[in-house]
Image 1 (tube, rainbow, N blue to C red):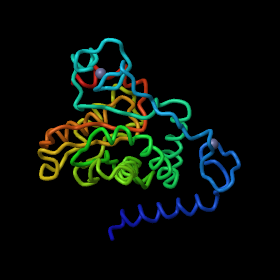
Image 2: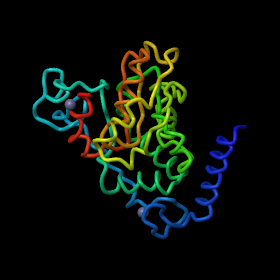
Image 3: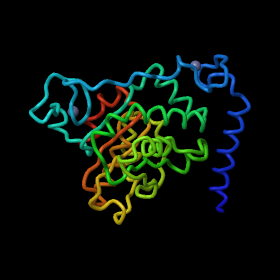
Length: 259
Ligand SMILES: [Zn+2]
Ligand SMILES: [Zn+2]
């Protein structure tokens, strides 16, 4: 086994042991609990609801939809996705929970959250099917500080909860590394940083419908670069699903998608 993979497995095991040793406190807020890792107050239960005034493409609320249900911005600046869906706005409980999973980090909390999210995604997954469910890969740099990929945990949970939705492939999309961690950059710098970070294996994605899985959409730079790599390799279409979307995305979508 390569040293890097050995390190990843050891770190995952280490974090599982730590989580098992301290099971009596909520991992997010620290409140004393029974055997749970997460108190009810820290688990965002209610997803963003579908509504007739949501764009069928970007899922934003707007009264100005065309006959296909698309908003003005999606008509003028088409996204690389056919549909974008997310469970929560990236604020409050959702932000605290996802930040804890990613920056604490906690593999077990990631798995719990992925399983919970997969049940909330079921209505969306039952409305379609895809050839492949593709998690957004994480950079090697990120894996050193967080030895698991939350997007992969979510993709596997989606496949488990909705077996007809598609088959997970964590080899179709490759991450070649960024010059700097995305979280350390200002929104305007993020697209440039990840623009050439992804490539897709043509023999895996050519002609396929893809459900791309991300954890948080902040500016959308990462998911846009990943989707473009899939399309460049011949994917027929890409839909995007994520745990949460930040309001930042609304501010930067035109700048990001015009480039
Ligand atoms: Zn809590
Ligand atoms: Zn839209």
